[in-house]
Image (cartoon, rainbow, N blue to C red; front, side):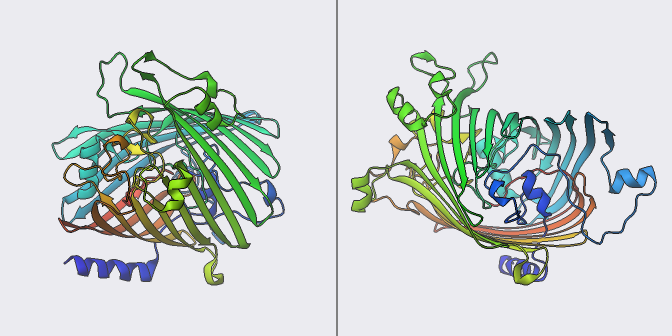
Length: 523
């Protein structure tokens, strides 16, 4: 049966190459799209590797759409936000965001999602932008998502849950962002949201796959150069709450990212981050003022204070051979010793990962046909630490790739837009090594690297060698571009396999959906 399901999925991909969104959605970063802005007359001042979450979510209506404004009801259903206020010095919008889905899994039976969301935002003057969202959810998911959620106490990317009707989940979460533009060169952002650095579908530096977190961000735009500093607070759920007075254990992070458009075709980004625990055996540490200076090099500071903090360095590269195509890549370095790296001994602390990808707009000169192919990999124990209190994770999920470490992944995505119809298809293939018999082989970044299996001979895929094939296709019809209200149908065929078990699942969903949330279930 599973082979026939896979065949059906492949046929669907071949016929429909599934559903996505317009170029404007990528620019605001609220939902991933293959369409991207590139190489215009001012492109030296545009930095594509940071998704901008500060703008008002909106889809561009397709060219040639001749629908005219009619009655108030018609406009609110198909053209506008539920509430829109525009004044000379003030704007405001608000909408209801439903996400109602019904489906079926061959493993978990009937699946469904009942989400009632709201979004509100606007501007004050010419420099201040604000946005807030809230979602109340109940749902029953595909078997692999259900298993992941119960194991980790969180719904992927959406926080903690409580039981609903014995076999479903009840969860709620919110996000918010205030952006203040101080003149031509500076933006100040205060948010409870997510962030993403990179030009691909995944990020090995900082992704938006995990749950929301509070942050303060300063962005300096100096023509070809954009420099960003962010301070954030994360939650560690591995340590149980001692009481309701202090909740879960906290940890802090500081991130610096410098992006330089060397030319219209080539850009280079330098990344560094430090994660430290809020308290340790000596007591409360809190926010470390050593990391307060926004232009300091973090690694020397981390070393000089003699701390056990987790420092990471990264590189983001992009080259555009043509107006409609981009080659991109990333490299993340957690720890290494040059002698051990060059010796090829597989030393455990040579912890690094990378990405190489290609994406294209208007593929084969077909307008609105976009494609991406991307390879991601991370060595065992990358992003892990002595304790989860300073590993590269938040709310039981990695801050970078959803698979953690000890993996190699190949992602292929294509999407196409025709008027109000959107098609999107994705094939993901991954190999990774899972822990087995209680031995830490380096995939789970929430395991201490002190419990590693071996000091030498470590390689990607060690442990319980597992392969994942995930094929997904979606077709959607856009109803209202202001808040991405759409009718959507999707099909997913997933197989996870090793020499101990094989998990096959085929899932079909229908829904009325809205919002610009980016949720990752392709793991």
